[in-house]
Amino acid sequence: MTINWMNEVENRKEDLLKDLQKFLQIKSVMDEEDATEEAPLGKGVKEALDYMLSLGEKDGFTPKNVGNLAGHLEFGEGEDLLGILCHVDVVPEGDGWSVDPFGGEIKDGKIFARGAIDDKGPTMAAYYAMKIVKELGVPFNKRIRMIIGTDEESDWRCVDHYFKNEEMPTMGFAPDADFPIIYAEKGIADYDLVQEKTRDAEAEGIRVKHFESGRRYNMVPDHAKAVLRMDEDHTKWVQYFDTFTKDEGIKGDCFMENGELVITMEGVSSHGMEPDNGKNAGLYLAAFLSKLPLAPYEADFFGFTSKHFFKDSRGVQLGVSFTDDITGDLTINVGKLRFSEEDGGRIGLNMRYPVTFDMDKGRKILDSVEGYSIENFDDSEPHHVSADDDFVRTLQKVYEDQTGEKAELLSIGGGTYARSLETGVAFGALFPGREDIAHQKDEYMYIEDLLKATAIYAQAIYELTCEQSSR
Image (cartoon, rainbow, N blue to C red; front, side, top):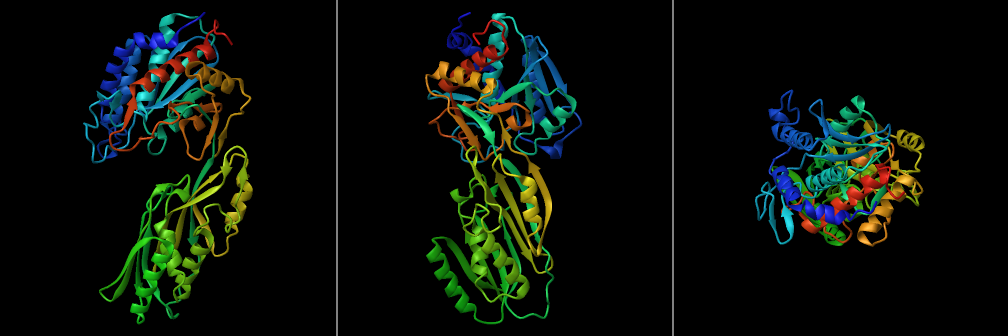
């Protein structure tokens, strides 16, 4: 059976865009302050979930609400199940938009709104792909299920709840990343290294009253601040700070306030999956402080922090450096730094490790760090589907059929819904060469890309589940 998938998409273009606009006009930002039992993540998120379930029911899919945290739409026949994992929640809109962030405005060949590319546009593309295949009336040998999450932008409670109560797909993809195919994702471990040494109140040296930098494990902090107590040499250290910042090419300020020395450092923020893309303000300030004649308690913490993490994002000094050919280097981002006279020091780390890294051995190394203990350890294991898997090869064929371009296999340090599946990959919908404007002001998706992605997903569903496919 020969099907022109793009023609099928073009025949439904008007309806696709209308349904997407209505979807984008729902402000589905998490709001737990006004949460209810029926809307545990807020009314907007629940409205978006209900919208997709109602749309699917109208079009003849079998809908199911799973605890108001997730849902699914299903059709087809067979024991095996193809899962398509999407999400309806979006990050807050922020400031500086030139259009209504929840208007779904179409202009210049693009559709604009928060969620246009992450993930409502790709979700609607996948939905219409299912709709096309269903309306063609081809015979199926598998079931097809769109799994709809509501908490992807925060804690993934939706998929955790869903898979505690529902069937795990035989295979599946998440249209929530990049084309061609992301087949490997690093493991992601968040944890705190906590200083165990006790403070000697009588010891001599500069005291650090307070130090703070960063709020999230997975972001490079762009601001840090320290308040120091010292009896003399204020001018000397202010001058040394100026020299340090000039030598390091970083901005900061150092001044006296109420008899204390206040130091701030300004860095460059970036995502923690590649710390070297930013400048960690906390680490620069820690490195500066480590050069001062601090009291022993402070000297231990800032000396340790500077030695093990300043300009070392690969875990070399910590003893956990590792790389493989699938996902590359282990990386460590110091996302949170805290120190106070009362509580000592705490280092919040985001470690992204290759798929072949032995975390059991890595954890033993971390546990053996002298003078520091581990708290709040949370580990999301790496995800990898073999490049030789028939599922991956089918998706490669489909992508190449629809684009005429080679379907390279990609690996990332980030995490997508695909890692929730035993056999799953991230599959679009951002095409190579397109700017990634997810989470930014004036977020958009090209209409051309929306339609092309729909054709790709439709052929993929057909190839993977239909008895008459050419596989």
